[in-house]
Length: 302
Image (tube, helix red, strand yellow):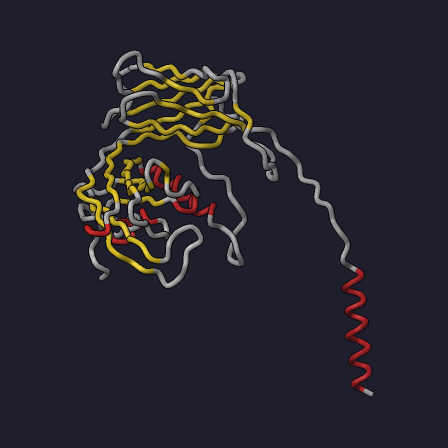
């Protein structure tokens, strides 16, 4: 008798729970568009660019709308003025030198000013020193699994560079296959504080640690004949924390995921009660190295 009563209760609960499966359409409010700034200057000669766009709705999947009609200029700490113009009317504002001129120089500070729709936005950054890359080597390697886009058997690349003596140097490490960035995913961003990953590691003045040196593989091996490139970009401490947060939000998910947060921007509206802006304005000095994978020159697997 008890067995039949238990079965009846089970089916009754199942019926109730099934009947509660109603489709709920969520209506989300679309807030005002915000100015989004993507600007990274370098110490390399030639044109420099700053992209301006507008933020979209949370579930929007189309391309970002460009911010048109803005006035954009950069002034360094020696009062040199660089005007950026949007010649193609697509939100990409460029400064083009009249002659062989270089905008970015190590040790200088740069202030960005944007005038857009009656508002004025500003941000300041600096170009710090960057060490040379001493060498770029590779060894034979075999993975215990087949990666989605790369070979199971190939070559593991590694660069060697030494952090400057003096605590607080920050870097952004970028990897290339030929002329293409090996990964543009925010989750694959690699940054370093001195020779390690973060402050407090007592890594001042050392060779970059092994995980950073091998981060240029981006979880995949290279193949024979591939062109391997690596760039070290010097960044400010503020940019270091910005990129860390970008990577954190890009990999935030799963059962341990936390509610997403707006990434802190260094773009400030000069009017305290004015609309906020998103994005970042940074600058870097760059050192790079490149090699072609030659199996005859590869180190054997350790």
